[in-house]
Amino acid sequence: MNYWLMKTEPETFSWQDLAKQKRTLWDGVRNYQARNNMMAMKKGDKVLIYHSVSDKCVVGIAVVSKEFFPDPTTDDKHWVAVELIPDKPLKKTISLEQIKSTKELAEMKLIKQSRLSVMPVTKAEFNKIISLGS
DNA sequence: GCCAACGTTGGC
DNA sequence: GCCAACGTTGGC
Image 1 (cartoon, rainbow, N blue to C red):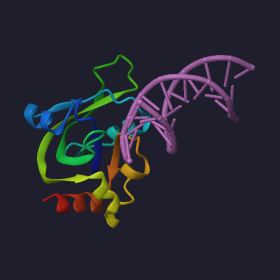
Image 2 (cartoon, rainbow, N blue to C red; image 1 turned 30 degrees about the vertical axis):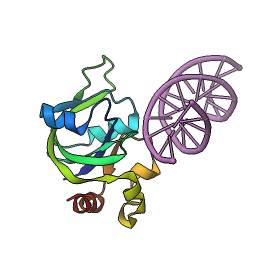
Image 3 (cartoon, chains in turn brown, yellow, blue; image 1 turned 90 degrees about the vertical axis):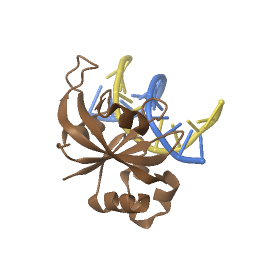
Image 4 (tube, rainbow, N blue to C red; image 1 turned 60 degrees about the horizontal axis):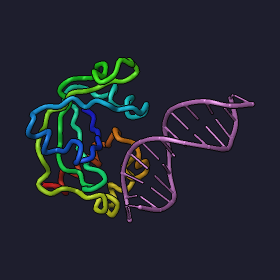
């Protein structure tokens, strides 16, 4: 199984929206690196949901429920979407500040490459966040 | 609201 | 194919 992190602006689409809707199409990604990561996702992979900008916290865990398919929001077949379902929220959200100050998490792509919106997370990083958040 | 980082576009 | 100009993201 692989682990990922996806960013969203909570004003646009939040973890709470996902929890309410029970499933969502993660579409509209227009960045090749992010798209390549989405194409590598397998059904059942776990995805950390991170709120950027106003919140700056990892807030919950989602699961890939449908592997990539053409993005329905565009005719350009370069782009893809995946479907996610909520797994569970973190009891304690993990702030960007906390990630930076945690030795095991300080090398995350989230910090190194702040503009990438879909990125792989190592198993160790994923587990660390889960343990900090529970 | 500003600006650094970085991706994309387009002229040459 | 290079690179300057420009646009966007996201932290502060």
